[in-house]
Length: 445
Image (tube, rainbow, N blue to C red; front, side, top):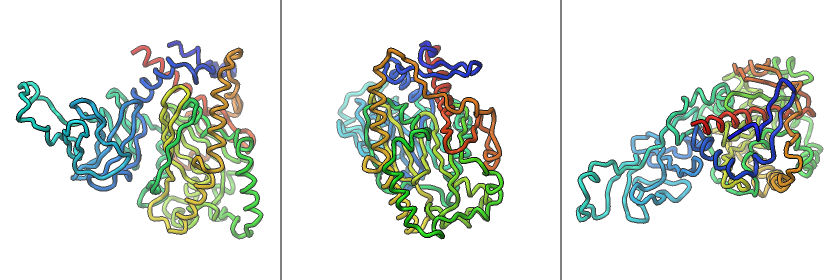
């Protein structure tokens, strides 16, 4: 595969363009599944989804069905969710509790450690000796690892260690996990929906500040109306307790960071305000982590761990898992994510704000998915195949980090500091450079 057909990357000329065909070509899609989703690390879920012995949840790594289960001894493992007998899917619910899984096709059974416990009528089966010598347990996922409660797996065994893959972006997962001394959890309930467009549109949109005022005017009007109704003490921030940000943030509204392996963050300064459910813990978080790092927790942050995990902390806190189904069809699984141990009032506020913005019933998600589908239709216009949506911020992007990254001890590959209207697009370059490298490596292999 000649990736230059799809990504025109010439930094020396100030040019970065993406071809419309990258979103529609069936051969590209098949290669993406094989090389990105089945050829490297993908996000599977959170440890809290299988918190107790014999708890399990199911997901996918590309086309491979995956079962993540905690055994009776408390060890988490990941398996291919397929009976070794005839290949039938074993666990058929998204989450549950089971000491034993029984295949609904021929009743082979497996314990929560993946071991085969019984083969129906085995004694009467007249099996050959070779069959008896084989392992009849569930096939373990070749690679499975965790970082601060975030679980990742790989169908391919020859991948770098997870910490190397996450690299400097791991600091941003730490920032999510550190919001409670007890860790993080998914608020009960999840939403699964599809949209009729390519998976990379969700990848981009999470990092796209440029669309917000155009695509979400109804939400903005609601916020403005609510703001007028609030008293001055409710909208007040506590910058006074965070001298670092008070001094360093002048003239800066936010920016972006780009990391190795396609991970990115776009962020904006919010301030420590009661409008955010974490406010009740502001003093404790400052004592535990320092005021400057605490203030990072209150910032708007949209994090993508390439290729399929997004943590959006803006209107509320959402965890997203992207699953490509076809060049023009994508499944999204989403949850509200929260620090463990927050008060009932803070949890109530978090959920109400979540409902405002997210899910197909919220005021933002439908705007976004309609835009994705409009883009997918527009990609049929191949008279001029090269898209121009990757140029904002080219002259503002610099190598390395900046004073705000230093607060987290984080060293990104590139960074941008900006006012509210720059709306950097250079962080998309990180996605497509990782995409091009992985696609080219896969073709060579």
